[in-house]
Amino acid sequence: MIPSLLTALRQIRADVAAALAPASIRHACETAGHTWRDRLLDPVHLLVLQILHGNTACAHLPRLTGRSFSASAYCQARARLPLAVLRAVLARVTDAARPLADGDDGRWRGLRTFFVDGSGVSLPDTPALQAAFGQPTNQAAGCGFPVARVLILFHAGTGLLLKPRTAPLRSHEVTQATLTHAELRPGDVLVGDRAFGTFAHLAALARRGLHGVFRNHQGRIVDFRPGRPHAVPGSHWGHAGQPRSRWVRGFGRSDQLVEWYRPQNRPVWLTVAEYAAMPRLLTVRELAYRVNRPGFRVRSVTLVTTLLDATAYPADAVADRYRARWGVETDLAHWKTTLGMDVLKCETEAGVPKELTAFALVYNLVRVVMWEAARRQGVCPDRISFVDALRWLSSAPPGTPLPNLIVNPSRPDRIEPRCQKRRAKKYPYMSHARQELRRRILAERVAS
Image (cartoon, rainbow, N blue to C red):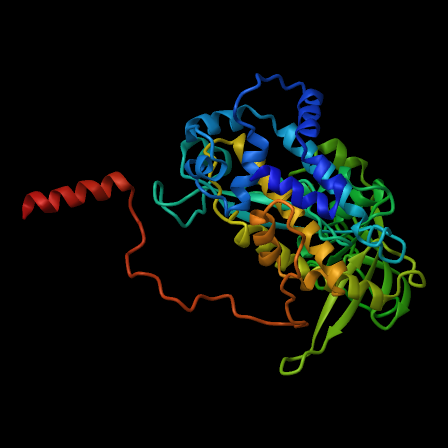
């Protein structure tokens, strides 16, 4: 199966296939200082194969490869593989695939753009994962599953997924957001929802020469009246109900330059020294646009950005860039649901980021197939069926050229309810530990 996968990738991009070749993986292991003995199992390729087939069971891999080994042997080989090796392979595949966007790196107004978002994945119920990540508070002990928070960075031009990061369930996404800045270069633009539009995060971006476009937090008051009064945190200037920002300049009816005051309360993810080093005032731009959708009430969306030049970055263009962020929801659905990542299989804390990195690697390989199919079929890459590209990549016979893939209809502003039509079986939810339920069943049998 793996030779056919590499053969299929060579038909699309030889450099992407080279990043997955045995010699490239061996070099990544040597760079990470990983020593090994030449044996039957190749955990990197087997992990890719496992995910390509819907994150199938470890015991299924011998059937897929035609080799004789146990599921335990494969798990041990995967456990010995360093996370750095998988991240190195992911980085090489991503770097090789980035020129897909017509060679301009998918730039928006000359700037590279990235979308950031967070999600959660369910984990096996083991003591180690419970201690490391925790489970939802509305679930009783022994009745739920631990959940890991995952922060994802998408390249806006190609849809490629960069290095995912994990955190405990009860942690805020912005605590991991600053770690993604190392993946960016000065001048890059980071786009996200209101969770990332905080003073501390915007200040951290500005310190690195990066830009941000985020939805304004619902707790922050925005007033577009020129010269309007404002409140100063920690002083008697102003009163409650007034914005805690000083008006500087207006660019339009709903577009203004303001200075945010540093909040009095230090975020828990910042040290005292880091918080003290932040400026007392941060110049940002606030703008609002209206959403007019037939059949729905008109509503206003307020954004905050560090793109201060209203001529180079008009309000309409910034609003369009933020609206494009909603495509991340579809990408996350492909990554989690289509690939089978919503429930991970690893049972150790160290195995969680490894499995997530492998899912990111497979996701990017499928995106490469989608881009090539879109180029050949003359359509937008996002209209190529992710599922169809995944099916071809996982089962393409050696030497078979890439066929025309399914093209989804164009459905802008499509809305679908997030609910299930098929009813589940009417079993009660587990509200007590398994051992307690077993004791009750036995007691009922004895009594009867």
